[in-house]
Amino acid sequence: MTHAPHASLLRRRDLAVRAAVEQGLVTEDRSPVAALLDVAAVREQARALHAAFRAVAAPDQPVLHTFAVKASSLVPVLRLLADEGIGCEVASPGELALARAAGVESAATVLDSPAKTGAELREALALGIALNADNPQELARLDALAPGPGARLGLRVNPQVGGGAIGAMSTATATSKFGFPLRDEGAREGLVRAYLDRPWLTRLHAHVGSQGIPLELMAEGVRAVHELAEEINAETERREGRRRIDTLDLGGGLPVNFASDAVDPTYTRYARLLAETVPGLFDGTYGLVTEFGRSLLAKAGTVLARVEYAKTSGGRRIALTHAGAQLAVRTVFAPDAWPLRVAAYDPKGRPKTGEPVVQDVAGPCCFAGDLVARERPLPLLEESDHAALLDTGAYYFSTPFGYNSLPRPGVYGYTVDEDENVSFATVREPQTVREIIAESGGAQRDALRGLMATG
Ligand SMILES: *Cc1c(COP(=O)(O)O)cnc(C)c1O
Image (cartoon, rainbow, N blue to C red; front, side, top):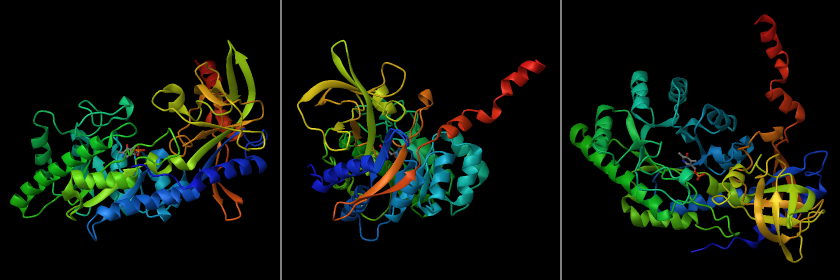
């Protein structure tokens, strides 16, 4: 079941590219590459998520949707999502600080990282942030902190239901580094015991995986988590007269279709599949938390880069653009797992027409593999044209690679009014050369010479 996008999403993208060129967002002086975010598309997707779960949840069943901050660690984006009723899933002190800078409440924040330090655990407890412990040693550290009854604490389990198409995105394989394994010898009994011993453990978390995981496998993982919660609750009910686990945290990972403009799968399809696979999930027994990242933002983002030069080498056409490994890290280093669509625009930002020509689209980095598309049929990209990397709203704007000291590009949100006027708001200024010097030890210029003098 594919949901055809509103035609206006594509129209808005073309208008935004044109306006970005006209308004000088991708000029030599400012920056030859920019990231554009369709604000209406983000809001639409957030609303689609709420609607999909509302349609299957029990009336009054608490459902907290959080956004996996690593997918777009930009304060204005987190604020936009918060306005749409979406909290934050954080996995580091930096991400927690960004969520707080965006004004996201502790009650709407979940901390999940696999290697939390003692200081992070103390901070999360002090702030009242929900936290999922990853392993027995972390649980022992929590024991030492003696959490109060109001703490919202759970364990992350690995349901070990298997992996998907991309190994690096598969968190529920038998040997994944994440969480308490559920199917290892004696693991289940150990988990039940962990809850019986700790009255403050009230939640259960699993994240089956991200891009490349079949929906059915995700639902199987959720089924395993629900079954375990039921088992633990039956035990605690027998011993303490109460069902202890009140909240299930369901991880993220809805795959994104990078092959066309269609939103596929939809949140509705996933929510319905969950309701069919795990009927008890939506009977109102448990509060639910979700942690979607990529699927909330991917389709809303476009990276727009100037084509600096176009050349031919060994018979291959190559467009040398300003979008490469410094922002499309996964696409460049794992091109088969992370292919991107490229759209061609002319020097004025109008869609390029013309017979497709097989060409490579290269980035600006000094290594031969810095290609965002190989042997791709596209209208021929020429000097001063623009190349747009589509579906790049998640993970591309905010997970840079510092190669060649290339600056992080500016990020601009846009809206389009009825008269097709485009308005931009700066989400992040392009990084300046001065900032690059500062983060590269510029203030410590003589540090190593000093060592030599005294050595
Ligand atoms: C990354 C992550 C997510 C979000 O995954 P997406 O594929 O971006 O939706 C959710 N939960 C946890 C624990 C994660 O690490």
